Image 1 (cartoon, rainbow, N blue to C red):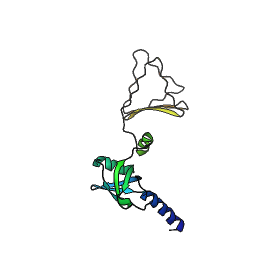
Image 2 (cartoon, rainbow, N blue to C red):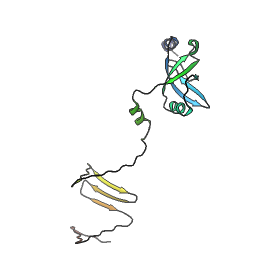
Image 3 (cartoon, helix red, strand yellow):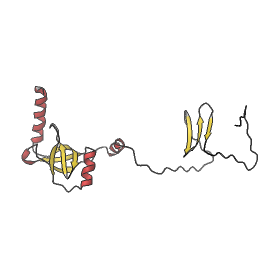
Image 4 (cartoon, one colour):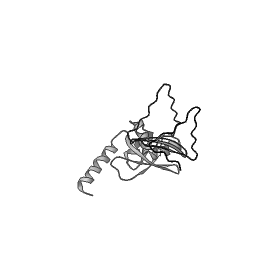
Length: 165
C-alpha cells in the first residue's frame, strides 16, 4: 500500500476512535454472529449486540448491507458494539433496487363509452395460450388453441383476398 493510502487509513481510524458513535455497515449475520464494516477499516469485524434486534431483522439488514450505529469498546476499532440499525434515507428507492416488487393482482375497470389502449409498435392482449396482437403496420394476429367466431345477426368476412385452410 502506498504511503498516501496508509495515511488515509490512519486518518479514518482516528476518526473512528474519537468519542461518540460510528456509522458502519452490517455485512453478515450467521449462526448468531454479526459482522460489521467500519469506515476506513479493512474487512468485516465481529460485533457484539447491545440492542434487542431479532434474528430476522439482522439477517435482512446484512443482506441489504444496512447502515448501523456502532460504539467502539474502550475506543478500540477492533471491538465494535452494534447499538442500532439506521433506516435508509431513501426507502422507496432502496426497495426498487432490492429486486422486483411482489406481484399484486392487477385489475382494470373502465367505466365509459370508449376505451383506447395505444402502443407505438404493437398492443398484445394475452391470456394463457391465447393472444391478440395489433401491430403498427395494420396486421392483426389472433392465436389460440380453439378460435370461435360467433354472431347473433350478420357475420361478415371481408378482405381483398380470403384464404381458408
